[in-house]
Length: 172
Image 1 (tube, rainbow, N blue to C red):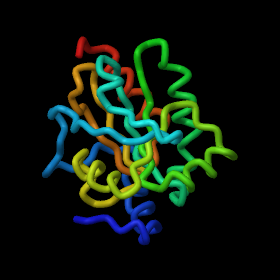
Image 2 (cartoon, one colour):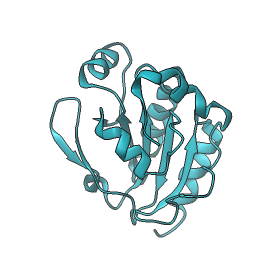
Image 3 (cartoon, helix red, strand yellow):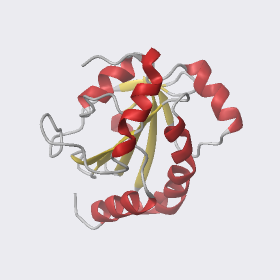
C-alpha cells in the first residue's frame, strides 16, 4: 500500500485504535534484522541507523501534522532521559519535510535525534511493517538490531516502559 501524505488525517488517526498494541501478524518484520537506511537529520547531515548499533532503539515514525504524534513527544523525551544511560536511544523519523519539522521543533523541544524521511520515509515505514499507514508508529529494536515489537497509534507510558525494560533485560 502506498502512503499519501495529503491524507494526513487518515494516516494519523488510523492507528488510534491500537494504543500501543503489537502490530498485527502477516507481513510482520518481528524477529527480523532491522532494515538499514540513511537519512538527513534536521541539520541536513546524513545519519545511518547503524550509528546506534548495540543499543536498544525505539524508532518512532511521526509527522508534524499528526496530533497523536505531537502528543507523545513529551513521553518520548521522558523515555530518552530515563533510559539514555542504560543504552536506549529514541530516534524520531519524521515522515515530513525539513521545513515543517524545523519550524515545529522551534516551539516543541525534542530531546532525541530526529531524521527527516520526507518521501523516503514512506518506503522505510513500510519496510518496518507499517503497511496500513498508521501514524504514530513505533518499532522496538534490540541491541542485536532485531525488531522485537511494534506499536501502531499513540504509545502509552506503560507499554513503552515495559517494552524497553523487556529489551534491557535480555542479552540481545
